[in-house]
Amino acid sequence: MEERDGIGASNSNTGTLGKAVAVLELVAMAERPMRFTDIFGRAGQPRGTLHRQLSHLVEEGLLELNADHCYEPGLRLLKLASRTWMRSDLRRFAAPHLQALHELTGETVHLGILKGAEIIYLDKVESRQAVRMASQIGRASPAYCTGIGKAALAALPADMLGPLLDGAELRRFTPQTITDRDALEAELAAIRSAGHAFDREEHEAGICCVAAPIVDAGHSLVGGISVTGPAYRVGSALADWAPQVRRAAQSVTDELAARLGPGGT
Amino acid sequence: MEERDGIGASNSNTGTLGKAVAVLELVAMAERPMRFTDIFGRAGQPRGTLHRQLSHLVEEGLLELNADHCYEPGLRLLKLASRTWMRSDLRRFAAPHLQALHELTGETVHLGILKGAEIIYLDKVESRQAVRMASQIGRASPAYCTGIGKAALAALPADMLGPLLDGAELRRFTPQTITDRDALEAELAAIRSAGHAFDREEHEAGICCVAAPIVDAGHSLVGGISVTGPAYRVGSALADWAPQVRRAAQSVTDELAARLGPGGT
DNA sequence: GCCATTTTTTCCAATATGTGGAACATAATT
DNA sequence: AATTATGTTCCACATATTGGAAAAAATGGC
Image (cartoon, rainbow over all chains, first blue to last red):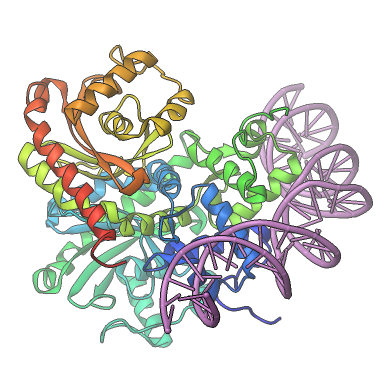
């Protein structure tokens, strides 16, 4: 099969919808607003088709077309995501534990969830009430070079981990990034036996964290909790916090399990 | 034209996509996870069709189908929305002003934007680093009974305001909610001349706010900033803060205008 | 544990819907 | 004013969607 330019390579059979959301993602994930031709260049879709797709996305409020012919993500995405976030069981169960960890450490605490080979951040408790309040929520980072990501990968059964790593490119972000498959497997084994993972400036220079995995029944959902801070400040403390992070993650795991067992929906 | 049950009443000609996102919204906006039959009952779509739509949405990651056959909003929505939020010019320009207002008042500060007859909250600076950190972001509230909403409505030219109010039902939320069209028009006129709006427990009992409008060129984008707090605490202070709120909103308005004029993109 | 019932999923001919090349507008640039 | 770049519309054709009905799972009662 000949592969078209740009997007849509992975979409197998979601038909019209798949193409439309591929366009949506292309626009939403771009760094800057795109004009029609910019999108046309990357979408690998005929003019007429692309134009209609964009029109429909705009009419649905998923995109917006501003005065200078630039397509931008629409507000309806926010509205939809807001409900997703508020209703997440994982987030609700984890929230008090995140808060407790923050009060213990004084550092930033993250809750993330594994989606494919990426970690998507679901919640965050931050020290300074910074302006960029919820900036990380919904953000996606590669799993193999983040604390939560490695903890989650390590918690995955072998038959799910293998294919996932096969498909992932181990790109270098910093000098510390693990870019070798074997080294990563060794690291995951170490994490498995320790019960927690460290990120030693592997994703972002100067930023370290300690993380522990959260697992739902049948590994249908895997994620983790982390405590993050600047290397100079948390360097030695991370190891001390590990047990508490492990305990918090374990509590959430237990609560997720209990939800289906004794109680209701 | 006979109108079908449930969703899709307003979708005129977005074809397949429109129906799919209508289903998506139905599921995402529901209070609790829905099983197939629940959705079937409200979607007004034949079984086979609905099933394929849901399958596609799941395959695209916009919905997720958990172990007990319940459809839930998918993580991809968060990822998409995250970029929407981070890239918003309005949010970026407003952020420092929100922060300043929060430091001045010590109360919660909101940034919202008018979308149809609803206000969608774009940002928030909160006093206590509460657990419900970003809970309001992306949330939608009716315009006619919120401070930002009324400020935004008042800033709208008559030819846009009329149709908008015609389509909106003035539902009562509290004893103070304005449910009469004429009373609302009078209130908007008062807001127009004052330059700021008060919400005196009209949406939520015990909660008051003062708000001022933000307007982009040609009213293509209308929103506002508000300072919110419990009635017993902010009751008398709101009026004092009004000038500062007005000034902040005006600054953002100016910055939005300046963006297109002299400078860059 | 087995049968009756509900709920979910699959199938396929008919057809409405999306496709995409090319012609047509419109705005920007020389 | 002419030219180029950009955005929008059109329509014969093919494909994806439709929706009824029937099969397969799951659920619940006895």
